[in-house]
Image (cartoon, rainbow, N blue to C red; front, side, top):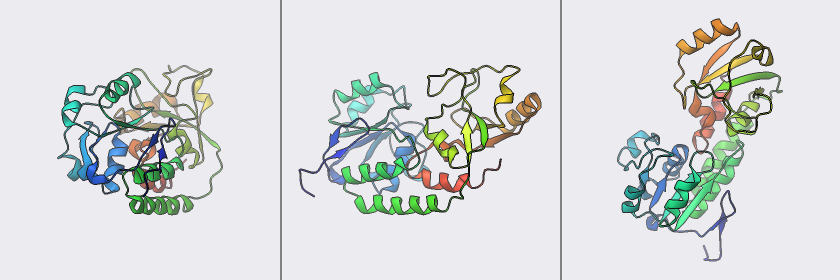
Length: 264
């Protein structure tokens, strides 16, 4: 690969390829930490968040540097990374800007639809020169995508990600676009301009959606929450695997398969 080849990230920054053995990567994105491992780059990972839990047998040996938003900047500095991987939705810009002062290469990601994963695989595969592994993931993704049944978007669902305050998702998020493949459109509060808006229950809102999905992350909804909300609303409420619906990267392949198990 020649030195005049560049790869472009989510904010238009160009990155030159580098041999994986020369890279020291800190990932602030749990799903991308898993992707890095699945690309065969685990030995290049020198730091991860406490929420980077997959692959468990691999990441347990990689130092934790805080959460996705409350990172330990000095600990990261001591790790001397060459590359930082962040996400527009998950990480805060002031933190990323502080880290960019001493990390030479900051790779910004922002998958917004399931098929954006293909570009993500190829971006990281190209930067760290593991193109063959990236193409294997692309092939697996395309197969899982092709195997999805055709569903017309007829169900309107409220997808809950948090409680106290209750929070949901906007229609232009990765989760919403995943649910579209399952024949669902997400309900959001009127006049909402936020990607992850808060809302309050009222007597009329339940008429605006067909069912409720309670995600297992980031809030840990359980079947007890399902039972209580079903009694309150008199509508179907379903507990869903948040990782399968919100994690992009390599987990998205399993996520596509998971969509086939949802029933509305």
